[in-house]
Structure formats: structure tokens, C-alpha cells
Length: 228
Image (cartoon, rainbow, N blue to C red):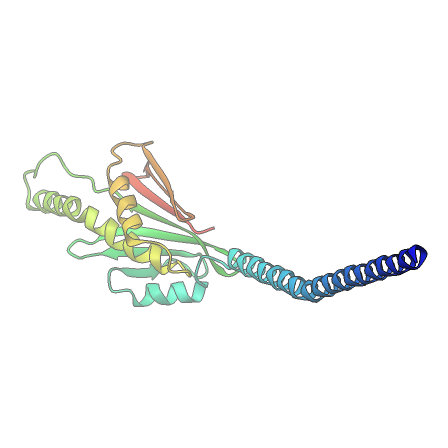
């Protein structure tokens, strides 16, 4: 009798172990199936993120390589139709223009530009500074020259602002140059008082340089704008 009970108990324990093993195998198999099912989803997400990052990098590189300056033809068309000043070409293909602002007499300046891949890369605008006689003199001619020089002095700042405020943004293909930056540059340039004085600044990747120099006849205010 006892032996029979022991056999029955052994069989029951054996069955329990078999069932437990089967349950463990089922649970492990199910976990592996779930993990395998999730892996493609995670892989797809990683691939999508990598593709998005690659696309962003490509776009950033393309924008970096895009010239900041407008094509030469676009800039020359602007000079020909500009209403703030007149521009006259000085010799064919010399990339130099004579500028005039106002009248009776006008404030004169000269503009030179450089190209990179057919687009404007820099502008250099030179403003001869007016020479004012010490007094009106004794003749009508002397008085006229004196008054003309005084007028040039009065409108010189307006001329610098009008020309730079027009030409610099017109050369910018990205339309990112701020008017407030140009005005700040002009104000600082006009504060230069003697030969050798210099002002230099960079705003948003655009570089501006202004300095006073002694020309053949009078001192000059030279302003250089770098787009690249």
C-alpha cells in the first residue's frame, strides 16, 4: 500500500515538473517572439532618424556652398535702375563705377566689386572727403567754392548712408543683411576723423571694414563689404 502511494506521489511530482517545464518554455518562447517582433520597428525608427540626419546635413552643406552674393548681371541691373544715386561704368569690364548722390554739386564716390563663381563677393566704395576753404575768399568764385564745399559737408553723411544702405543689401542674394547693421556701420564709419583711423565689424557672417586714407587730392573714406 505504501509503495503504491509512493509511486502515485512520484508520478504526480513528475507531472508537475513536466507541466512547469512546459510553462517555462512557453513563456520564454513568447518573450523571444515579442522581442523579435519589436526589433524591426526599432530598426525602422533608427533608419528613419539616420536618413533625416543625413538629409539635414546635405541641406546644410548645400546652403553653406550657396554664394551669398547675387550674380553680377543682377547687381549691374540694380545699379542701372537705382533711384538713390547714379552709377556710371568707368571702362568696359573694369568692375568700377562712378557714383553720384544729389546735385549742385553731387557727392561723388567710386565703386569696385569682386566676383567669385560669377557672383558678387566684395564691394569697395570710396568717398572723397570734401575740402573746405578756410574762408569765402574775395571773389564770387571763391565764395561759390566755399558754399559748395559747405554743402558737401552737410550732405556727406546722407550720401554715405544712401549709397551703402542701397548697394550693400542689393549685393546680398540671401536677403539676410539687416538694415540696422548697415546703419550701425555707417555711423561708425562717419566717426573716423583722421588718416589711419579704422573700424571693422562682422554681423551674421557679413564683414565690414571702413578706414580713412590720404588720396591724391584729399582724404578718403573707404568702405569694404565682404560677402564671402
